[in-house]
Amino acid sequence: MSRIEVLKTYKIYIGGKFPRTESGRYYQPTVNGKPLGNICQSSRKDFRNAVVAARSAQGAWSARSAYNKSQILYRIAEVLEGRKSQFIDELIQQGSTKNQAQKEVESSIDHLIYYAGWCDKYIQIFSAVNPVASSHFNFSVPEPTGVVAVLAPEETGLIGLVSQIAPIIAGGNTCVVLASESKPLSAVTFSEVLATSDVPGGVVNILTGNREELLPFFSTHMDVNAILYCGNNQQELKTIQENAITNLKRVVNKNVKDWIKEENETPYSILDFQETKTTWHPIEHIAGAGSGY
Image (tube, rainbow, N blue to C red; front, side, top):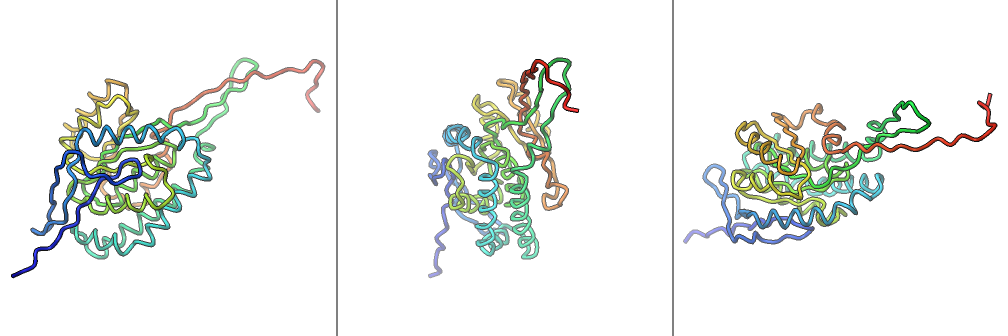
C-alpha cells in the first residue's frame, strides 16, 4: 500500500499566538495537482479577534523609540536570513523556480533592512517648521494612523507580504494582513519568524482564507483606520472605497507587478499611513533682549 502523506496544518497568527480558525474550516491549495497543506479558512470572527489584538498593541508600539523599532525590524531580517533555505523550499513548492525563490527571499530580507534604517529618519524628512504670521513656532510632524488592514498581493508568497508589513510597522502602526490565498505557506511561516523576533504580540496579525469572503469585513470594521489593497480588481477596489466611507478609512491601492524592484523601496510607503499633527508654541519675548549681534 502506498503511504498517505500527513499534510501540515498551517495556523493563523493573532496577538502573538497561533490559533486555529474558529470556523473550523480549511482549504488545500494545489500546485500541479499536489496539495500544499491544510490552510485555515479564516472567518469574520478571526478578523475581529485580530483587530482587537492590533488595537491593543498599537499604543505601546507607537510609543516605542525609533531606535527600538529599528532593532526589531533588523531582528526580523536576521531570523529570516537564518531560515532562508526553508522559505526557498516553500516558494518552490508554490511554483517558483529555485532562482526565483532565492531572489524573492533575499529581496524580502533586504526590504526589512531598508525599512529598519528608515525608522529613525522618516520623521526628520517629513516634518516641517511652518512660517506663521504671529509670535509662534509652528511644527508639523507625522504620527501613526493606527490599525491598518492589508489585502496582500495574490501573486507573491513572501516579498509582497513583507513589502506591506515592513513600512507599516516602521511607522508605528499595527496591522491585520490577509495573505495570498493561492500561495499561503511562506506567509504563515513568516509569522513564525515574527513570533521569534521580539515583535510584540498584536503588532502584526496574519490571516489566511478567501479574499472575496473577507474583503467586506476588512473594509467595514469600525476600528480599522486604514486599508491597503494590493491588486487591480476594480470591482474589489470600488467596494473597499464605498465601505471605507463608514468611518472615513484611508484607502491606499498598490498595483505593483514586481515587488523585488528597488523602486518599490521608498520611505513614502511609510508616509502612506501617517497623519500630520501640527503644534503651535508661543515665542516668549524677553524685555530688553537684543538681536544678539
